[in-house]
Image 1: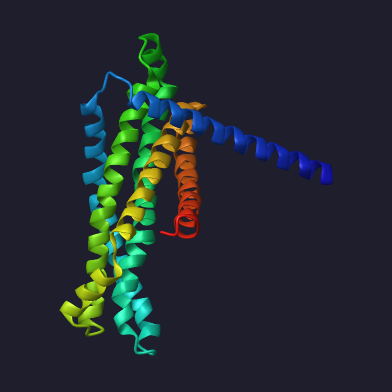
Image 2: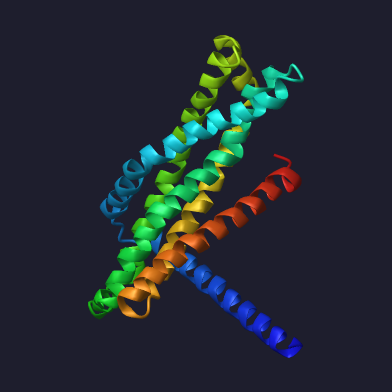
Length: 262
């Protein structure tokens, strides 16, 4: 039993390291090719338009209700301590530094990451990717780079808008339920927020965008088994993107708070 456990652990570790290595290689190729002429800006902008407007409603809706939920949950304790004035500050900092970037990334990963894996996976099983190689077209340059740049461009934009909408959600609870003065609410929000809070959240979204693009494209390019394989690749892309986003968020937060003291 112990031997089997060690063997399975070793195999699992080997698969994980191989997968991370493949992602790192694809990321390196994508970054190099995105900086190498010729540049096809229209393809990246097309992907950005697909990602941004399509995800706008759901990301802002979630942010709005999350802002309301934070205000309601904080009110339960803060009212008992007569510390209602802290609620706007908590809402502003929690949303901009942590909740909005992560939730926006998870939503986009579920919506766009799955679509990327399915789209490229379908091209792989129908040998369209092989056709690109036959015509001396680099699949990474043609398929991965536009989606990579589109996500890096649009995820910070979606996060910025969601930050504002989320704070408005908290505003409604604080002003109309907790009876905090309108001017006081915004004064407390701007007192608590600093540029570093906003910037750190946006820096996270750049890494999250990289993860969504690379994981989705990697799964699509390595599909095996026809239509069934495409379905598995789509599910795997979403799950692995979720895991990597949470892990990356934890690491970046650790670096900001404990190493850079930001």
